[in-house]
Amino acid sequence: MQDINTLLTEIAWPLTLLLAWIAGEFVHQRLKLPKISVYALIGFGLSGHSLGWLSTEQSPNMLLLANIAFGLILFECGYRFNIFWIRKNLWLTTASVVEATVTFGAVYLLFSWIGQPAVPSLMIASLAMATSPATVLRVINEQKSSGQVTERILHLSVLNCLLAVFSFKVIVGWLVFQTSGNLLSATYSSVLVLCASLLLGSVAGALVSTLLRALHRVTQDSTLVFTMAVVLVVSIAHSLKLSPVLAALTFGVMARHQRIALSASQRGFGALGDLMSILLFVYVAATVSWHSVVVGFSLGATIIVVRQVVKIATLGAFARVSGISWRKGFLVGVATAPMSAFVILMLEQTRHLGIQLLDQLPALVTGALLMEILGPLLVQYALMLAKESHSSKE
Image 1: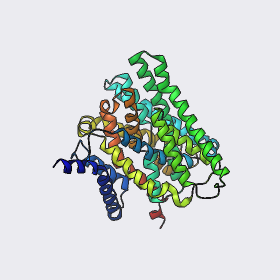
Image 2 (image 1 turned 60 degrees about the vertical axis):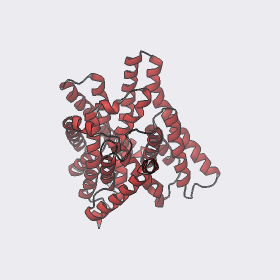
Image 3 (image 1 turned 135 degrees about the vertical axis):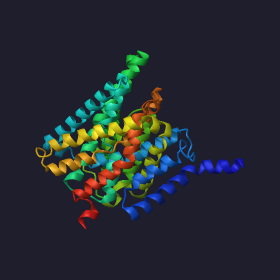
C-alpha cells in the first residue's frame, strides 16, 4: 500500500498536466473557450487545498519550473515589445503610466477606507496595477490575432508589468526595513535587486546575440539557443533571489533590438512552450486555497471591479489622442484584465525574505484566481469584437 501511495505522489503532477491538456483541448474544441482558463480550473480543483491530489507543500523546484515557464512567455513578450513605437507614440506610454497610477491610487484608497494596514494596502495596490503578459500572450497566440488592439494589449501588459515590479520591490524593501531595521537588507530587497535583474537580462541579450553572430546563426532558427538562455537566466535570477520577471523581459527586449530573429514556426517556443504554459497556469491555481477564496471573495471581487473600471475609463480616455477609436480603446481596457500568474508568482517569490504574503493577502489572491479564469475570456472576446482574432477574420 505504501508503494502505491508513493507512486501516486510521484505521478501526481505529470498526470495532472495530462488531464489539464485533455480538458483544455476538449473545452476549446467544443466551446471555443481559452485553454488556460481550463488549466486553472483543473489546478485549483486538484490542488492539495481542494481534492488533495497535489501536495499542499510548494516545492522550490516547482516554483523554479513555474518561473521558467513564466520566463519563456515574458521573453517572447519582451521580444515583441517595440521600444521605438513606444517612443514615437508618447500618448500610449502616458496612458499606461496614468492608468497604472490611478489604479494604484484607487485600490489603495479602497483598502485604506475599509481600515486595512498601510503596507498590505500598498502591496495590493502595486500588484493590482499589473496586467499579466503570460495570459495576454497565450490568448493572442491561441487566437492567432493581429492588429491595433492586439499590439496595444501586449505593449501595455509589458509596461504595466514593469511598473508593478518596480513599485512592489520598493514596497517590499520598505517592509524589510520596518521589520529588521537593516538598511542594507532593505536596499538589496529593492533597488539592488531591480538593477541586478536589469543587468542580468541585458548582459544575456548581448552575449547570446554575440554568440549567434560568431556561429553564423543569425539568419537561422535560433529558438533553441534562446530557450536554453532563458532557462539559464531565470535559474540564475531565482538562485540569486533577483527578479526573474524583470530579467526575462529585459532579455527579450535586448534580443529584439540586437536584430536576432526568432523563427515564426517556433512562436511560443513550440511544444516545450505549450507544456510549460500548462504547468504555469495549473501551478498558479494550485497555490490558492479554498480558505483564501472564502475569506477574500468579496474584497477580491471589489478589486477586480475597481481596477477594471479604472483601466477601461483611463485607456478609453486616451484612445483618440493615441491613435485609435473610442471603441478600440474600450476593448483594450477590457483586455487588460488578467493579472493571475504575475501576482501569484510575485507573492511566492517573497517567501525567501520570510514574508508569507500569499497567506496574508486573501483578497488579492482571490482576485488573481478569478482573473486567471475570467481574464482569458475577456481577452479573447475583446480580440473577437475588435475583429483581430483568426476566427473573427474568417
